[in-house]
Every structure is written in C-alpha cells, then in structure tokens.
Length: 350
Length: 80
Image 1 (tube, rainbow over the protein chains, first blue to last red):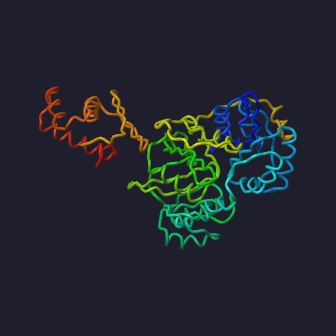
Image 2 (cartoon, rainbow over the protein chains, first blue to last red):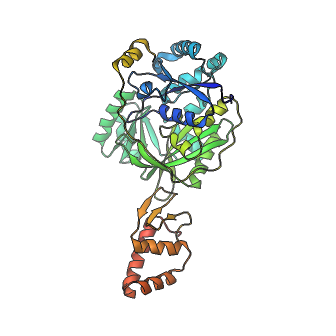
C-alpha cells in the first residue's frame, strides 16, 4: 500500500444507484472508509443519469466509457485517454455485462500500469447461468435443474420436465416466476426482447433468500465471506434491507466454491435455503453486490481488501464479522444543475 | 425444551436468531420464561416459578406451555 500521504487513484464502474442498483457507489463508500490516506475515485459511467456521476463527495471525476457492445478496442482507447489524465492505479469493474471486455483487456491495462483483480474468462464462463447446473454437478454443489431455450415452443418441454411454477430468466439479468404456460410465454417474450437469447428456464425452489458476498485470492483461499438474509425485497427482487447471518454451512459453501474455482476477486452467491436447510445456488454474480458496504460495516471490508491484493499485498483471511448487522437502503433526491448534466452529456466527463 | 445456544434474547422480549436472521417479539411472561431457559433452568422449575408468581391453574399453564413450545419449535428456535 502507498504511504498515507500518497494518493491512490481507483476507477470504479456501476454508478447507477437506482432501484436496481449497480454496486459502484457502495464499493466506493467501502474504499473511502477502508483505505488509508487520500483516495481519488474516477467514476466510469455509461449513461448520463447515473446518480454517482453527480455525487461529488463520492466520485471525484467521472468519464463516460463505451457500452460493452462497442468491444474491447473502443474501451481500451477510451481508458488510455482517461489514464493519461488521471494515472489510474486500480480499476474495479462492477457490471456482469462489462466483465468480459475488462478481463480480456487486463494484460493491456497492466502494461499501462492499471491493476485489476478479476476472475479468468474460464471462471467467468463456468459460473454463467447457462453453465451453472453442469458446474454444480461437477463440483457437488446444489443447483436447480434448468433448460436453455431459444424458442417459445420449447416451454412445453420445460414445463413437463421441471413442473410449475418455473423461473424464466434473462441472459444477463431479471427472473420471472411463471405459474402457467401463458405466464411463461409472456415472460419469455419480455426477457428475450430485453436481454436477447437464450432464455434460461429453471426449476423453482421454495425457500429463504440468502446472499453471500465473498472475496477469493485466486489461489483457492477465501479472504472474506459475509452471508446476508434479505429482510425486504423489492418488486425487482433486490434486497432493500438485509441482515448478516451466523451460519457455518453457508461459510463452508462459499469456501468450497472458492476452493474448486480458485476464484479471483469479489463475487456473490445467490442462495435459496429450503425448509430442510439445503442451500441451492441460484446464481453466481461475478462481481461485488450492491449491498457490499455491509461487508465493511460487519468488519470485513471486501473492496478495500481487493485493492490491497491488486497492489500485491498479502491479505490474510478475515476470521470474524458482526452478526446481526443490518443495512436499510433509502432513496434520496439528489439535486444538481443542468450545467452538470450538459457537461457529462456533451463532453462525456464531469 | 432447550433454546438454541446462539439465540439472542433481551429483557424487553426481543428474540433474534442469528442463523436465519428472524426476529420475534415476546410478551412479558414469554420473555421471563425465555430468560430462565437461557439460564438453563429446567422446565419443571420454570413452571413452578410461574405458578407461584401468577394466578394461573396448573392445567392452563401446561396447555399454554405446550403451545409456547410448539411456537418456539416452529420458529426454529429450539435445539431438537
């Protein structure tokens, strides 16, 4: 780590602190709290109304970057421009959809002097929704059965094999529970229009929703694991309030995941724990969750630890955290001026 | 009737299960019973304390005790 009087420049994406929030603002909050000395945060945004852009006590300067569909060349060109001005030392991407490009670019970024701490492309693909069931079978982890489909007609077969209700999921985000064929068809059209193909149809598991935020060192060691039970869930299925749990079986599950994948970086396991206590892995998100500040509040600052590891520091696994620590999200009308909106819109930086 | 070891209770009757994140509110008598259970007092002694302190028939206490036991079990608060 740099001496406390040196400035650490960290670029962070996902500043969309909205009702289905990106993790960026929470990651920055944890970084500012957990790192010694001055931290300069460079926000990397996609859209002009991402709230983090205008929160100047959170983000020092924001630059727009091209959408993931623009490819790695366009992204690298833009990052080089930003790096020339800001001398970024570490970059933390926080969106699923952008990770592929950032992982591909990580050697080029390193040659520029920008460190990342990301999983490999193989790790990213193994936990992909479309491969998750096979992944679970291979490693002895409980994952609901699923079918990958490209046509609405295939829903008949899914229903026969998986039964109702079933869960219809988009390629990147969103899941809809369908109790009838009509509902499943409607969900299929809605999600394919939004996220493209294929659509994942998954067995419905009844239970309690638990999420686990964790950090792996890339060699099979778990640096931090924080399980959280959702206390309040929005209509988009997001946790609006949650509480840290004490449950050794959840810690073991995350440890096993890190051990078998040798996961490098932050991730989130979405768990459905059945009435008999079986923890099904519903999804693996390959980045920090939006509630990641709770890890810092509970005593294991995962974003700050990731930065230390990205800088080559040997970070020891955390041993304890506070059980019963609660987060309650809230909405706040942040006021800005049209001049700021104009600047990010026209110049792509603010 | 044994409360799980990690269950947190307070004098105000708040019960928290750190394994599930569930929390409950108990009325004053239930809170009193939980305090005794946490201290390891045997159920027979707790019942005697309740009978001495409150105006309640033994038969009614037994019925209420069974109901309370069932509620604690259903709420995953007991060691089974």
